[in-house]
Image 1 (cartoon, protein in one colour):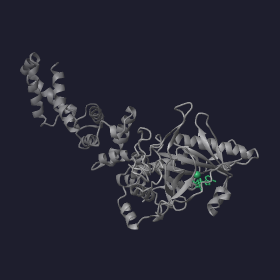
Image 2 (tube, rainbow, N blue to C red):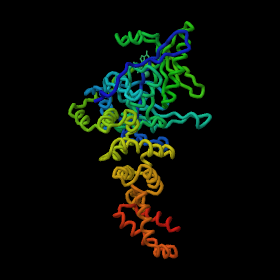
Image 3 (tube, protein in one colour):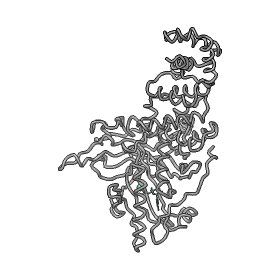
Length: 504
Ligand code: ADP
Ligand code: MG
């Protein structure tokens, strides 16, 4: 299916300006909020932006005696996401308690899946350039609860806690350290986001924090990664640092770059990189230590006694698999193969699922390339300029299709079509009707029309005198010309010519 792509081995980014060459090795842990109405173990709403502490069930607040109840819908979304990255689905998984103290974690532990995640190994095809892709292996996806939010900047003397987010379902998607550069890391997150948005399993709104990544970075001399690949022995790789909670593709790239340089400087100075968790400061353009390995939590993971192991049936997984929508890679391949689009155009049109849907509605029953041209150049160009999206577009897919049909039938030229698009954009309406009413139809042979007008005028000098005195009589000439040309001439063009010749 995806044989139109050229897979390249991950191409290491080589850091320049150092004493020797260094390559980057990156692995990501992406936290994706499940797009569900209710939380993972309670019926409380997941609605964003609500009054603080208004979406909190007793179990979210860890009231004594409350028991978690698994949300089947969230499990289904994790399964769908797993199938979307061609991963193994584990029919038996289990929940563990990850114990730590924090004011926004009333239970004193987070329910997660350390030992038996619901989704096993998969892969993500990362698009690097048109037709060029890389495979990033996925180690696992597990389900876990999100924590609440501590607010430290509302009062000089107090901190506040908002538990609305407590217990919201997250999918943690863990990659192998297969990512070799900042751009690839950003493209990887973008691809995961795209897949999940096609599936509807995560909104992928990075600004709202419902998609965020912990970025693990290490550096190694050339050749070391190949030895790791051959043996899967991590000791060939450098010591990694983890940059926590990144929620912007731009910052992910910048953070990787500065973190790699920091590590190289330490090693070239004869020092050793310490495995630790760091934070990226976009204002200062640096990462700084959050906690070192010595301070690392001992989470004392153990199976959550309140929850039975999660057993799902293959038949249920098959049913979910049977109802999967077309995914971005397949859609893109189909646009290239069946509609004859370039790899680049297909990539642009499939980037956002809403755009792909709009394009498909325009292209249905029409020439694919022409539809792609109009959607990408005219529509997207205009939408971008106005800060709109296909969802807020003043021109619907049906209207744009109507414009294209008029070009296809020869009723209007490509040039007139742009004027027509402009009219539909600003005034709305049915393109065919607008073309009819405003006489925008193509005049194939203006010279022939002019000759016919001249002939009628020359043959009727008396009528010309009358019409010059009474402009209303010009209509008689128009009728004569239309008759003489067998009704093929554009009435508006004839009207214009007659008026001009009569000096009106
Ligand atoms: P932890 O749970 O302590 O964060 P994991 O084994 O789950 O550790 O690994 C976390 C992430 O770190 C994974 O995405 C993995 O690919 C990545 N990773 C592991 N070793 C390295 C390394 N040497 N360089 C870069 N990334 C790494
Ligand atoms: Mg980690």
